[in-house]
Length: 169
Image 1 (cartoon, rainbow, N blue to C red):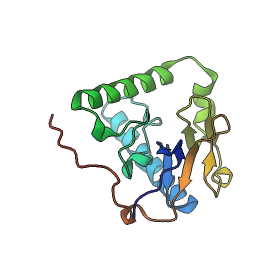
Image 2: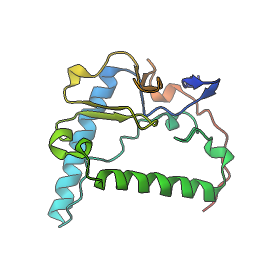
Image 3: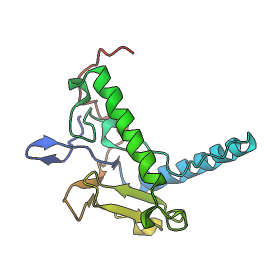
C-alpha cells in the first residue's frame, strides 16, 4: 500500500510528522529522548558541548514519498538542486535556532516533549505533556495543512511512492 498524503489542489504535500498512532509516537519520543541524552553525555565526556535537542526526529512524510518541504518531488530535481535544497534547509534551521526570539527560549522548549512547525511558518505547536498530544491528526490553525498524521499502519506496510533515483555524488 502507498501512503496517502494530504493534498492541496490535488497535489500531495509534505507532512512534518507521520506515524502509526499516538502510542507509537509516544514510544518513539521516549526512545529518541533517551538516545539524545546518551549522545549528549558522550559528546560532553569527549569535550564537545553540542545541543542535541533540536535534532530532526525523522518522522516526516518523505519516508513514504519523495515530496520535499517546498512541494517538489526529489526525483524531478538534479543532484545539484537536491544539494542546494538541503543546504538552504539546514541554513534556515541554524539561523532560526540562533535567532533571538521568545519561541526559541530554552526554558520554554526544554519542557516540550513534541514540537511541530508547519511549513507555512505561522503554525508552531509545542506539547509539554504527552496527554496533550492529540489522538487524531492535527491541522495547522493558520493554513489548514495536516502537520501530524496518523496512518494506523506500521511504516514497513507502505511502499515508497516515488521513482528510483539515478543520482551519483
